[in-house]
Image (cartoon, rainbow, N blue to C red):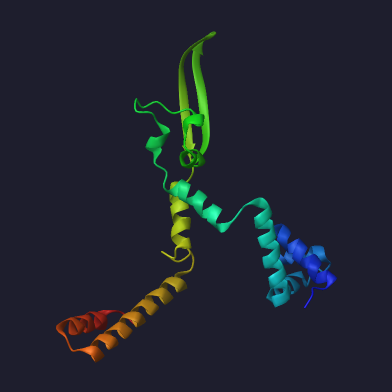
Length: 193
């Protein structure tokens, strides 16, 4: 099924800022109903497909792919600061840095200290990207912890883990009544839930 002209306009507007309400307003819906219409449009499979295609096209044109984003996050998260320095402890010039190290540097400041026209010394400061933030994003991507502000997800994950262990116990008990199965049963009995 093809998009109507208004649906296509909504898709085009939505791709500008990924804000359904604003896209609906720019498409011509009234401000009073824009939020509802934006949500309704986003629920339609034909519009979802068009948005997904638009995002894929945009990513292909810009070269921004999930793989590239993960690579950059990895560069920030796994920076080895020693690569920025020479064996004598001096900071390497930017052109000597490998791509991974250079990508993790957010900024550099060079201050020349002098008297008159003479330079007595130079102070170089480098600002690194947020390593912890990059690690947090990677951990979230890998499912290592739930998104902050969603304790219900943590509770659900714990509940599912308990159910999984109970199922494992049943499988062990039905296979054999070993002492390990009994030990596991005792441990699971102590779990909350």
